Each structure stands twice: as structure tokens, then as C-alpha cells.
Length: 271
Image (tube, rainbow, N blue to C red; front, side, top):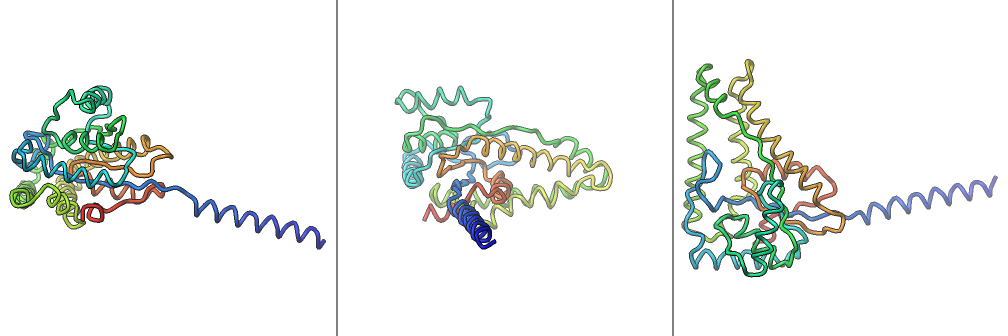
């Protein structure tokens, strides 16, 4: 009996040690989400910032400084807001750029994404976007039918205030300063609240056109999230994602609740 008790104690101890060791050694991929403004206009967004000349010497210098700082993370992947279906064509352009045979377009996908990838000596920039259109026309019709046009008016007022705010930040500050500002928790919440405060309310209790439109926005971000977790490999220690700021609140929530990842705050990198 003593021998059996000794063996049992040994096995339990071994199990506890193995379990504890496994927990301590579990690898988490660090992921840095960078919500950005779109450098090119017009873009596909209904409301967008009328940006300035990112080809100017001043902005190009700022982009060099920004990507130099980001390259210090030694990230093993850079992910951008480009359709996953365009991976092959994106690879072709990126490879030409690495060989100095391609001039970057004004898009932040290339001005930040490609530029950073080259500094990190990456073989590829990962395209992870998936587009789902929102039912804007149905929302507008429903709002009119239900005397809720005031919601669309209030939404427009709120969005224009936010855009003007970001526009003023861009005119007065550097690209790094703008990114630090628009990635603050309160600014991410400000963007997401537009969908949850105004659009979701339209048609509530009847055809739920607003809620369905918001669900399309969430679906798009869930698809992007699926692409992220599908493309991150066990060997990846650090991943940088560069996406329109509006996507970040939802992506942040999804990744925070996946214990394979450790989110890195942008302001801890861009000091």
C-alpha cells in the first residue's frame, strides 16, 4: 500500500509539474494594431479625411522616422488592409519595391506597410482584408419611413466633428503624432460608438435595417480576424497590423479574447 501511495504521489506531482511548465512556457504572439487614416482620397468610406500630400519631403521624412521606430519591434509579419484575394498581385509589387523597381503609391498600405516590410527584410506583406458591403440605401429608406432621419443627421454631425478633429491634428502634427492620437482608447471608442449609437437604432423593432447593417460591419471585421489568426504561425513572435482606424476597436476586442495573443499598445511603441 505504501508503495502504491508513493507511486500515486509521484504521478500526481509529475502531472502538476508538467501542467505548470506547459502554462509557463505557452508562447503568445505579440500583436500591434495600428489604426490609421487613409492616405489616398477618394477611398471607399462614406466619410473620409481629405488628406494632404504624403509625397512631400516633410511627410516622407516622417514616414521614414515612423517605420524606423516600428522596425525596432523585429516583427515577423506585417498585415495590411488589402483584400486577401489580391495577395499574389501585392506580392509582385512588393518584390519589385524591395528590388527598387517600384515606386510606392500614396496608399498607407504601401507607404507604411511596404516600407516597414522592407526594413524588416520580410519576404511578404500579408493581405487580410475581406469586404462586406453595408446596406446603406436600406438604412436610409428605413430611417425615412420610421421618422428617424434625425439619427442620420446626428451621425453625420458626429462623424464630421471627428474628421475635422483629425484633420486639425494632421495639419499641425506629424504622422506619428496623429497615429498616437487616433489610437487612444477614447478615440477608438468614439469611432465604434457611431455604429452602435446611431445606425443600430434605425428600424429597431421592425425590420432592424440598422442592426443588420452594423452586423455587416462586424462580419467584415470577424472575417479579417479569421484571416489574422489563420496567417499567424507558431513561430511568429511579433505581428504588426496596419488598418483603417475604424476597424481597430472590434479587432482589438476579438484578439484580446484569444489567449494566443498579447496586444501591444501603440503608445508604448511610439513614445
